[in-house]
Length: 161
Image 1 (cartoon, one colour):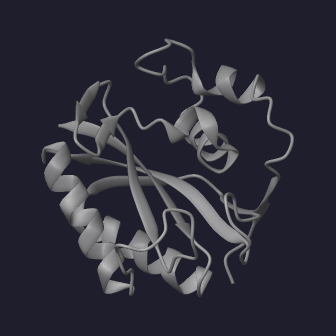
Image 2 (image 1 turned 90 degrees about the vertical axis):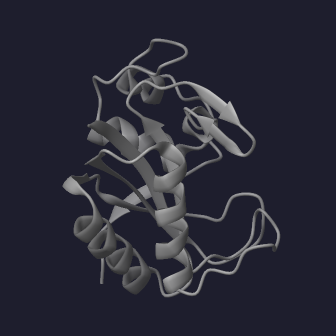
């Protein structure tokens, strides 16, 4: 059984899509836990603010199968693939960590690079798993968040509507 961490984000009908994602994850996987929800400005494009959080769950599925199931959840919420990388999203669920597995197979990279690059991923991950260590650099997520240096990435906790 692996402990899996995913990031969840939406900037279109945010509350409804985030709730739908959490409901779907709770139905498919066991021991679901989640960070608070954070609001942040769009990164990489001009657009409406995002809601973001990190969720964790246990699964016996392999990483590729988990990604397939995450894509199904996104598509049920109207996610269309093939557009720009940084664009409005009904729902975006990305596999961040699969235990301490390190892998690079095509587009599937674990741990996901965005963990250390984006506040909207690192802060909720550090909240949910502060003492967990990054599989590559060995630092805890609390340490990584404490030392995160990009002041241009603001985010703040919010309550889902």
